[in-house]
Length: 258
Image 1 (cartoon, rainbow, N blue to C red):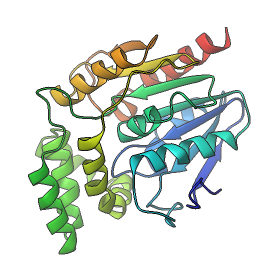
Image 2: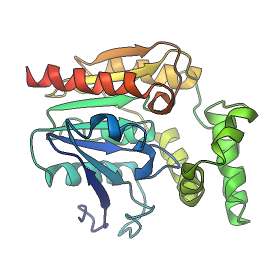
Image 3: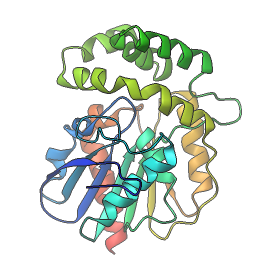
Image 4: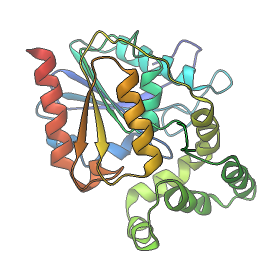
């Protein structure tokens, strides 16, 4: 399909039932949702969109801005059958917040939307500058390693465990987007909003301090939202506690449908 500015967007659709639009985070693509979809495809029509600049959504019609990404989510959801729910993870959650007051959704789940808060800088400017230099030299894997180590605070064994997985190469392919998204995170200043639908915000109990701060700030800014802490989890419970995340998706939908 095509977004408001003419950018071509792609997605996979798996399952049957109410629409569940899945909006992935930074360095990822639609395959990020592979662990979760098998748990939900019998209950939802899971729409795995590729955000602009990667995989099946590579043709961009205008200069980058997070607001255009929000328009992508809006355009995608508008074209999909109702009833519908949106689940945004990480940067995908921040993207979703930019159109929360216009989103034709019946429910929304946001998992740790990143943006700078007082005393917490999500990605230092010097780190973005270093990534840009590495990308210019074709050292894409080093950028991805740094993203996990310096932003998400993964240790070396955790990063090494990711390398053999298919998702690693997908993230290497999309890693060029990380600098512009980092710039957007630094500039993002979410405003208070009163959405028309139920919004559940997920926060990993042991996530990074910066992500914890932005997630709690989002809960305060989104009137009526429900903040849910995932015990013992960090930023990637979609992988480490998949059934728990699926449970919260189901509960959010049940609340909207009641």
